[in-house]
Image (cartoon, rainbow over all chains, first blue to last red):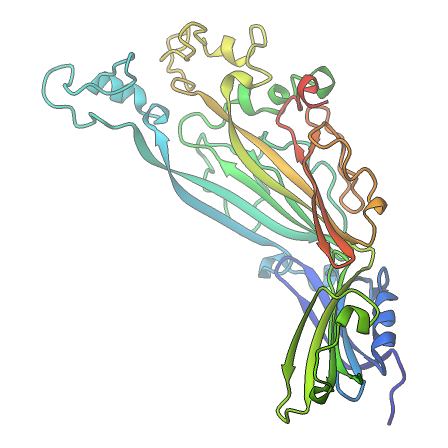
Length: 237
Length: 209
């Protein structure tokens, strides 16, 4: 049996990843390199099953037969998604230890009243106010931790407002699904970071992140509220 | 000199870069390797040769490129610290950061306690966390003139020329065009354009226009 140019071969590969990105790969036959190349070029901008062509490749054998693989990407349909089983939504709570200036410790005032503080040198003195060696002499930092909550999803279009509140306090906290808020019930607040967006066929893979404040007061509204950050319109800068 | 095609491969990536490898065989009895650019009528980016097991043929592989009008875009986040004094709300009268937390202009520090005697959360604070983002547009073109304004407005305030990711207007942030990266690939060009999102208040028009 001979195949005509552009015949789709049996079998194709489909996958849906955890973020809801749907990928399709098809195999196509061509009888010459020129027809394989022009066939592949002709696929640019086309869709298959609602997924946009994102590239491909081909391999030719010594007899001049060319097998091409064409790749397509789209967002998975709502029937394919199940966030409760981690399909279509990736959630992460990413904790990390960081070294912070000792002045930012929530108990710094107590440390100062206990061990003293030299305002001129911005350091703890060698001797405590009541006498005796200070155990914090030479201490400039302390180990605190930071936490970033991350959501990765694939969308058919970019949600509105996704860029408008970058760097501002998210009063209601991130929209947790399976994970729960580690700051629930305490004074810590969340800061909305800038998203990462990448085109994937006719879909968009979007990573959104929120950063948890340290203990004490939460993110300072005078610095991180939308109202404070938008005091200066770009037209006046 | 006689030669014959013995297969090959090609790929087309999401930026429109088409790469093909042609495989040819020609007799070793001819005594010399063909000048690939002249032999096949086009410029090849790279070539390599090996003698087959029989010793009768050179197998030459020639890689060529082409451009196919596809674009990939991405927006990526970054974070850095800015001096607290550069915050747009720093010197707002009565409600700004300096007024609320008693900034000492002479010492350039915040005091240990606020005016009401409560602990000052900004005591020791010298910077704040500023967010930004880089928008990148990657494509492969046959002619650099087909990329509008590729070499204009570099280092200046400029709205990204997006095609896929719609960039909304934000009244308190704007974009700075960064230097493009252009890589020649044997007759076609890989072009990467990028723009950086400003911090709060936008890029200073006196510096970046």
